[in-house]
Length: 127
Image 1 (cartoon, rainbow, N blue to C red):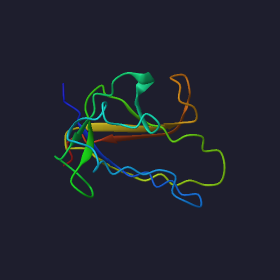
Image 2: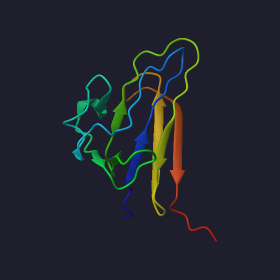
Image 3: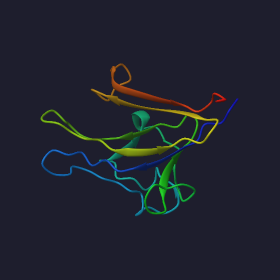
């Protein structure tokens, strides 16, 4: 079984007329992210531990990112976004030989359908 390890450098500049939220992970201490996050912005799936870590192994800008491994779920709480247009930007590092996914939901429940589901497959050998 292949190990899937994700590194996120996430910056959520959600654009309306002003930026609503942003996180570059530079202000956190290396190690477990669960004990450091602001509960208004981040949570593990249904309040379970995310087991994600703040890492300096990969980063898009700066020196730190959040590292999410196999069977780990981290939820960015963006609040109620119900008007106008929004732009969500993030960077996701997926090592060769690995895969990853990201989804956005209308409602934060396990039964809610996805608004967007993005899969990255780097498991196939390309000739």
